[in-house]
Image (cartoon, rainbow, N blue to C red):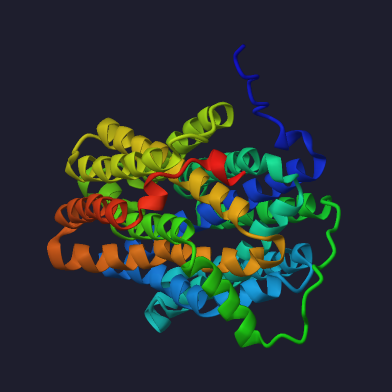
Length: 415
């Protein structure tokens, strides 16, 4: 008799998880809109790829600096309240950007890009504290047997927001102007706060309050670095994104290679997310519980190859297709890594382990943006992205060699 089919909507049948997923969607929608608008404004002012790369670095430095402490706080304090407080800080940043945009040219002549970089750094601090608290809170909302399913739906809601955000940001910027775009971002932030408010509160975890901060941080690091599967999965994703990410250079591709303007940039930014959503829906029905490691390595290889082909394309439709495939392959890695993280981590350490994961994964997007900017400045736009895709393929080969446990992994064995 065939095995019963998994309930693809199991996690969504839990009210608190539905509200949490809605909160993630609107928060992502707002942040992705803001990221696209900042990128276009910076490039429009400077026409310099390194200036775009410095946007990523401005967010990454405070993110990395505060990440371990943020994870420590997420394991000691009420996680929902942490998210609330730093969502408000994100809104302060958006209000400042709105103010700068009232006369951006004057601000740029007086201060250069320093005000924008400063707000991006503020955003990085807020995201540092939101990420481990939100990751740990998600695991408190569903039973353990639904972790693979909840990881898939977390990915779906994030990716749908990441599709809609750039497209909506580009259209709003192109047709209605930057001020209306920032007002929309503020409205979406308010909706995310309202949805999070509906999630029933979870008390702060009982913990050894007498344990020193240094000891608690060291415990989280030790847990990750002694676990070959967890460490290799994080490293594979980190270096894949670090070298293979082309998102920060998309304003240049849109303006100078494909000639499609801010509206086209929105669709280019959305294309990887569209592929990711399609893959997420597939994984909801067919979770990669067997031969998981082999699937992971194949997916990251596909991501690197699609980035190389995107860089070589001069056709808008082909470029969209390659970005779509990059998101499709990347999402396999996202879901597998998130599931490993939830299954392998005890609840009282989830904040700290999630913060280590965020250093590996979250900051790699911003450091990758800086790397892409520097490489484009030194090598030229297209060669730099081809080089990055090739480095991703090299990372896959090296990781497969040095991490046999990940290569042989089946998620079924971790449940």
